[in-house]
Amino acid sequence: MEISDLIIFQSVAKQGSVSGAARQLNYVQSNVTARIKQLEKELHTSLFYRHSRGMTLTPEGKRLLEYSDKIIFTMKEMQSAFQDPDHPAGNVEIGTVETVFRLPQILSVYYHRYPMVDLSLVTGVTEELVQDVINHRLDGAFVTGPVIHPQIVQHEAFEEKLVLVTHKSATSPLDELTNKPLLVFGSGCGYRSKLEQWLQLEGITPVKKIEFGTLETILGSVAAGLGITLVPESAAATFRELGKVSAYSVPEEIGQIRTVFIRSAESFLTNSIQKFIEVIEATSKEQLSPIG
Image (cartoon, rainbow, N blue to C red; front, side, top):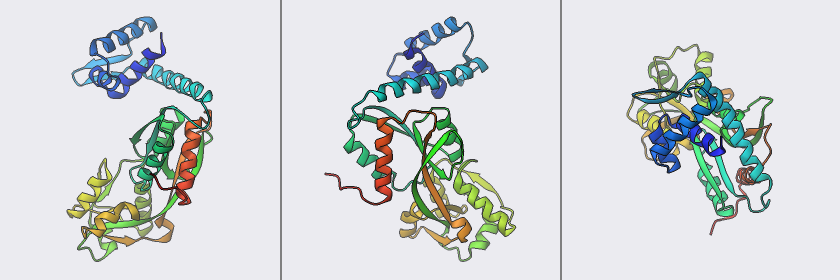
């Protein structure tokens, strides 16, 4: 068994198909199929259920995925440990919630300062991203804080104001809360939790909750009159400036949200991640030098 076998296995597991893994890794499908079959032969077990919709992990496959995540993460740590501290290189996988408004600035500055690092980004909700960091599937993530967990180290990033976003014709926030569906991210989202907390304080039972996968779709649906949402003020700024939505302040105990950057407490702090944290800290203090 080679590390490359585990990388192929990991890709098939996450993509849900041989064809998806082949595209991601730039391999031919027959090679991916052969390597998976060889891995199953070596381990004397089936790792995937094969069906018309693709491939899903068997219980033994899920067990191997946990081991492979740790092994590949440790390999990356070992490589990073021997890097020039001022010139990090390699792959860094970062997770983020949808509404980190300074993220493009952070990524741009980091890329220009450390061009030998290959950054990749995935989005999700806070609870999922925390688990991905704990299980070493991500090198770090921006999530709604605070995160209190013995396996997590958190670094302060930003504090923002939350606003209730409604259709532009709305006149009463409480009427909107009472009569309109809530447009939210999936369970585990910090903004959704805040909105549900507010409703509970007001003694309001929501008409309906509709889950979405992207911020743009949520705000577009609010603009179309489908429902209401609670997001950071910066996230709704463009739609508000265009006159497509209205935004209302919310009670102080609900209205503040912290975004933190988290990493695994059990992992070696690589040069790549240390430099990333430094860029975050500079951004939060608005001390970044202009690019160019």
